[in-house]
Length: 492
Ligand SMILES: [Zn+2]
Image (tube, rainbow, N blue to C red; front, side, top):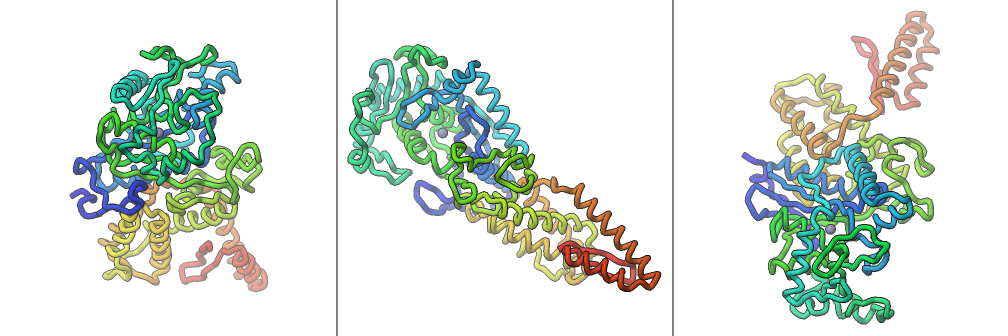
């Protein structure tokens, strides 16, 4: 039986601002759309966190037995420099500056995006459509919205009429904004803009001569507005109403608000049942910005080539650190935080690596089914990964006590325990055993060598040297234990 039948998942819906029981439209199937990157620069660490949050959602839904269609787009045209529909297309600008084709920019940064997400062990989505591959679909939606009178054409551009939409619908339903407030707070149009109202947004923009990315349309040569591609691609691949729509918190307004308005006019149904937003990442307590130098690229974390952190961290240690925060909390990315997290991760994985050497007994001193249920309960509660990790730490502690024969476990329980740990660590959290196993092995070799030297000292009745080796190791957190079968050690 599929796990979802016995695990009621709750999702915090940004639209209702409450945790709701998750009920997919079609039993056993989930349609999920996540706004992807605009590929004009290396993937931002904050974006990595967002996509990792939805990777956890994707992995857990699959683990529960759902058939998931996960659509995540690539924005390769139409995203202007600012959200007020002004400025140049970000990709076209970069292409102009570097004097190469826009599609070379798209290719370069799409490859970087894929490589980075693969390094950090995110699963690829089921479909990864591009904005430029869906121009026809976008033009069809614009035609429909124009026919319904909710958009207007002016000088070869088409704008969505937000004020008219707001007469019968609530523009701001997701972000909690009221259009009335923004009318009072927005400065007068400076006469440069051709929009009827500053709140209106572009569905199609006329391309001027310097604009290299351009397509023919009923309104002349131009390119689609940024918000439109997500409506076109999500409804094409997931239907007019689908289960989950995700993205970074910064996309809630205006991007997702515009998506809701477009879909509502086009299809006259609620487009999304559960809106999920991943919170942002800050670096050393400050907003990340290239201009201030408070900035780091994901690959610079893994290589150690940066001025922010004192050492390199593996992709799994970085992933583990990020998963120790709930996706709806702000995450402060700091060297100290990463180091603490890495230590915890190493301890946990070292304990789990010892699972195969655990001896079994007639009884179990830990209730394995209760512990297992706690793991599921944590993720069923809006994907609470920090609580899941706390439960895994509890398991690691138990493994160490089992190895020391201070706790007991039956063979049946041990099998279930191992399977559960494996599922959560590797399949659901997507962690890998990529820790400096090399250096761990080397440390083990060095300690074994010191144990031999200590044994020689003891054979020679050189108690002072023997004690010195033991105490020096202890001061480094390495405990020696003398037993009848010889000396063993543990690392704290
Ligand atoms: Zn989007």
